[in-house]
Image (cartoon, rainbow, N blue to C red; front, side, top):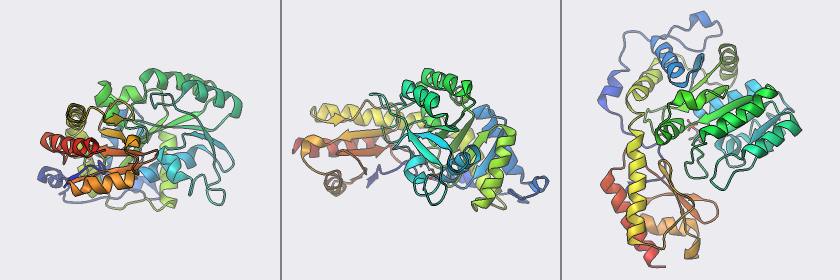
Length: 346
Ligand SMILES: *Cc1c(COP(=O)(O)O)cnc(C)c1O
């Protein structure tokens, strides 16, 4: 099976595991912070700060929780938060942070451009009109097919935000995909925003974890919120150690996933000229538009599975294929041939 459902697919090399082995694990997330003494957690935090250019960092079990803590740290109940309808932070946040019975933060939706990136003008107008407490961005954007936010757009959004002291938080679950695709260091992509959550366990390949990075007093607040959310992990060194490994070794590797996504598209277009993409591929995610088939995405994927390829359902008759560390270039070619065969039968 060629599994293109998600870039969370795992391969844990022994060097990553070796980094876990230590004489003594410390603590992370005590109410008295001077008791936080896990060396690996401290090393991971420092590394994440160096990479994102932020002052401080906190380890979270997931990016979902890091995003939630970021929203809670910036906006009180009843306050407005700019989000995009399909971003992960809202899709899952609507059941908690933005739910009228629970978090009670008020979502205000901004639009996207034709290219699938945030509409800067729309955000500017909403900031002026609504005076929100927070702007949330996702880089790369998952639902639009791994689209990178153009660096100029980040800068322009920050000009609107900083005029009114609005915090900008980036869900950077795939920040390093953007960094690799644009050939821009992650810290430059973070320079105009206040905080960023990076995922250790998507394309980077660690077993677990996300890191929230931002200004020192703000991160201290999110650590308190993390505790209340049940996100404190004692002896967190066993999570931090593989995190350090992937930040040191696996960022550049993401380029292989991008190359495999491009190879897939090239072979697909050669074998099935009528194949349609929702938009041009920028990173490791491919969105196929299957509307000509008259099939649902579910039906299309069921059939594709019979030919040894798995993908994920997306709205509007589209299908997402994610390229990751467990997919080789020959897998990418084979997957393209399978999709092409199916398209040529329409
Ligand atoms: C996967 C994902 C998350 C959530 O990350 P977890 O660590 O699985 O909680 C958040 N945002 C985006 C864009 C994602 O793709």
